[in-house]
Length: 179
Image 1 (spheres, one colour):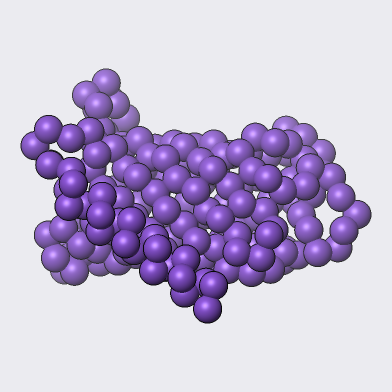
Image 2: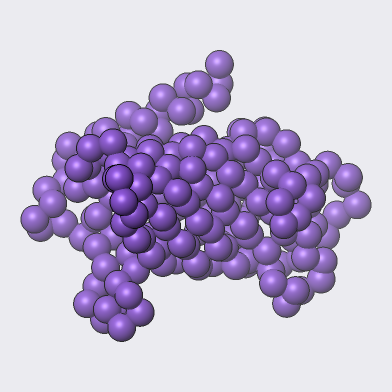
């Protein structure tokens, strides 16, 4: 029930923000929120458990980013509901439209976390550094001009710049609202 309450709260936040921002004079481009499976086995291996709640704000791409295909800056958080590793992140999102209302995203940036740097606990990740790289990808579908749904994957690790580097992968479903 606690997870459902958090999901409901995130959706209410998305709706509240979407009705208070005017597109023509806003720096905001989109808000997204959803639920992830925590620490799945993809690039890394599974140690931690629980469900994650994700929230993200995407900003209008500033003109100086036109040279790198106009990515939208983003700020977000992925919060673990079981008390394991949560992250706050920032970076850039590139988006490409596909036929039939589909789109794909690519994300690149950095993250900070509240997880373990080095632990012998077999139920926790050793992330090696308090600051991590974050990359991700999404496949989405535009339900309307303003509302979309997407399947998101995110990976955080220190890219072997510190030891250990167990990394973490999360994946889930998000709802987005474009201003």
